[in-house]
Image (cartoon, rainbow, N blue to C red; front, top):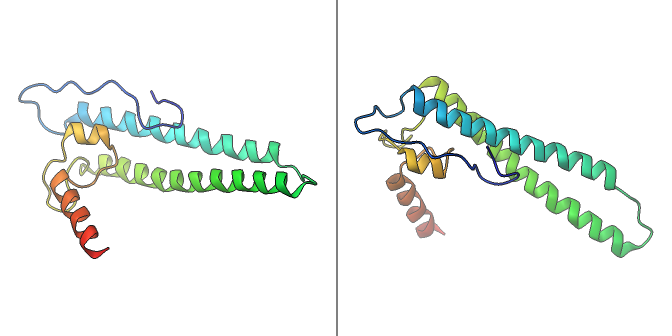
Length: 140
């Protein structure tokens, strides 16, 4: 359930009081989100390839050629960012398989269902991520 070319759009997980964190139901919820997101991104890759093959023309006018090249360059840059995102999605799917999904890679605490719904590829809790961003600002 994705909005084409956008971040995941899904029905939020309904938490139950006393429910175990990252139980089978939650893991299934996130696996579905990640797989749908990956599928949507892969469809965009296919669309780009077809678009570039179909629309590639040798314009005699240098301005038209430059416009097309700029459009293709922008499209390829976007796809490269999406390729990196697909890699993160694959890594998150692997974490689900190993039972490590949903836990901060830095401190080991629960990342949280709502944070993961906002950023399904998150690997750090909000505190560790905030600390990382603070350090980056100091070194910039």
